[in-house]
Image (cartoon, rainbow over all chains, first blue to last red; front, side, top):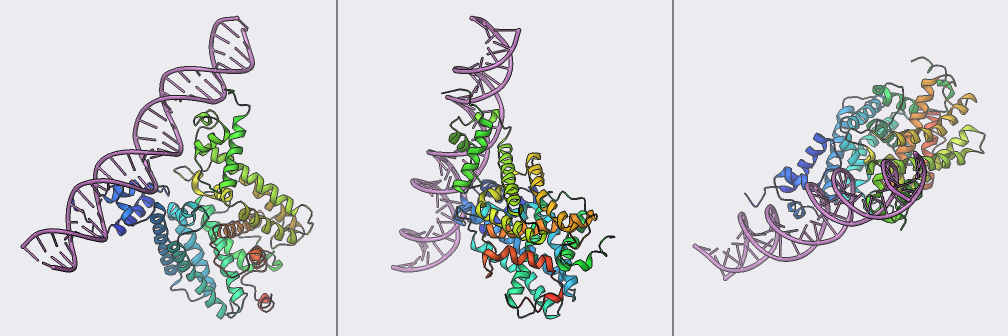
Length: 211
Length: 211
DNA sequence: CACGGAAATTGACGGTGTCAACATCGTTGG
DNA sequence: CCAACGATGTTGACACCGTCAATTTCCGTG
């Protein structure tokens, strides 16, 4: 009955992460987290002002996991375009393997009444995006993409577009909302290929007819 | 005190829609909806098996609104590519104008334990997507896009890619998670332009430097 | 016009997030 | 060496929630 837990803050985040991955429920109760950590239902309030604050840290942990996953996927691929394919697949796989966590990370349950998200989550999310931005910069320097390395607007547009497409695709896959006859394992490749070639590029019209 | 409401089913959905748009809270309580409709907290159970069933119908209504919004945006634009720009902007605008409703439509709160969504929501969402698919078909027939009209796989890939990019972008805009210096009103144009031209298309490298 | 079923009500139960009051511990100053 | 204090954890309470059960009211049909 130690009244003083060593590091309850960390223990609670870990317990919440366990709950999310085990039960695949993004909507766990704060009391359940406390129970799993072996403390009373009010102990968390000494370390988190809110339930939202705990959720925010869980989401931040998720973004750190995503960042590592993406980085590991592209680490040993020198070609930027090939690395982008790896990153896309790694992104969708992460979401598909951790649906509840992914939903918590991007879902609306940590927005307050004014759609503002906690700083710790935003920061972790921005860091995860860094992996993509760095890759795009590398590719631009190698003249692999349609914008110059110094063109910051082009870089921002590119990273926003790719990140949007990845998040959108991952959301559909997670929600089983893809409703497509395309093979699920190749969705990321298909989407990224179209994004690279261009939907309005007529020179791909012949070559895409047979897979 | 009429014990028999005329059409409580509709009234409850409307009340919920009002709550979503007024309070901009996707997380309203079933009891509050009943209160707003002027009935007791258990009356809804005569018309909806679950709270989830009510949420599902609200989301379906949202998809119908989105469908109308998209259709109205492209109705009088014969050029497919121009219409696609209008659709993209209309999509992002809809999400930006109805953040709570948009989150409810695409968010995780109407998934059951197994990430399955109610049929009524899925159906309404598919119908909304029809607007985009029809537009893509029209453009393909006019040789505006990179796939042939008969190439169903190309069509599916295209509509999945565009829908993903739009949903991803809209999510970021709604969550104020875009974190970009690009002007918010032009995000849809920028993303769609890149998607049409192709991220790996070198011929756009020069022309994009100045906006 | 009785009556049976649909629709709405009240009441209850377990669960939740959060606040307030109290108990316990480690640490530090005399 | 120990008293006191602040941080940490506990118990209890409150309002609210989703949902089930029992009850009451109403309308259409025989």
